[in-house]
Image (cartoon, rainbow, N blue to C red; front, side):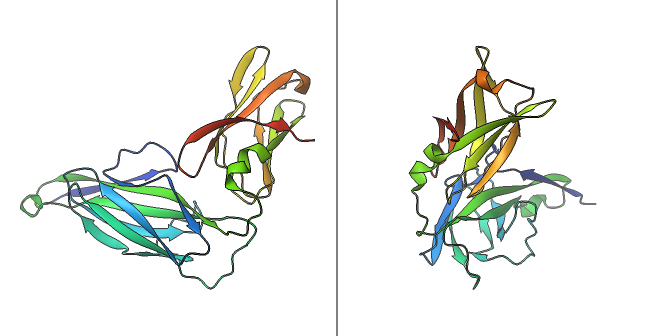
Length: 240
């Protein structure tokens, strides 16, 4: 009897993935003034794969059956070994999105190994890999420039009876894709845990792990991912 075991691996955003089918770039910037955007995929192995693609409105809601404001064409296709595939992404909704800030969506694509016909009756372990990438719907009416985002970030320090916290403020219309926060204290550089991106016109509070006198902190810096997937480090200033 033929036995095929499917194992689903959810690969979270921006992690290193050992996937045969990859996308050019680490995110999709979708200018609001364009009708569609072309996405390039590459199968880096000799094994053929079936690929299924869809867009979800939230990271937690990745159900391909849930309606989205975006449509992918084609949604399902086969990629031969060492081949490429162009996919078009359309904004298909009549919903009017904010014009002063980015809107965030997620591009999902599932890759399934194509089984060889002469081996289809053999027991197989099939790894079905699902990858996720950000789609940033970007109006041209955002007042600031994306290049200026890091220098517009600022911080405040607060404490309770147990711990101290750093709150990063993002006053721009762009998502601040932060991956690291560092601070110097007592001659030592410490990295903050559980760093996350900050939405437009928002702030987020991160735990420093212990209670610290704010006057002894210095050199607060963040690592930020730009549109091209580069990791750049910036020192930020305290909020006035």
